[in-house]
Length: 188
Image (cartoon, rainbow, N blue to C red; front, side):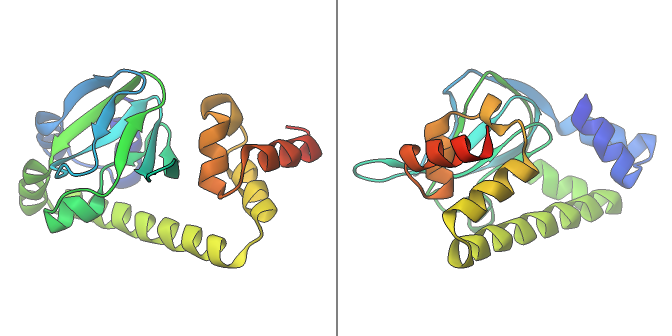
């Protein structure tokens, strides 16, 4: 499993710690367009993407707004719903057939209580999520849309092969026509 290999490289769990994690992981396949989470549902699990991709989006009256998308090794969950134990305000949907490694939140809490190495991984993941969210918020407040576009293709050069254009445009806060102009100028 690619995700577990990457975790091993990052924090080096002992065989016992690795076995404890593997015991709570359930492999699951999300078919293309299948939802991991619906708005209004309480998030009770989290999952790593082994293969595939998902998008996070809000459903407005007249359109969907893409909040984020994640590819392999990404961690899927609604942290707001998970931590508050309140209904989610977002949808999480597979953009292609997606293999995930899912864990129930209660099992993760127990795992972290028993093994400090998993507390360490949890801190690393939360720190990454907070930094990522702050950068995205800052970019929306400070950067021009074309700057956000350039940053996206610099960080994810193959994004246009994996994510539908309407989702990328929504994520950047622009129209599909504007995205087409940016792509034409950038030769993408």
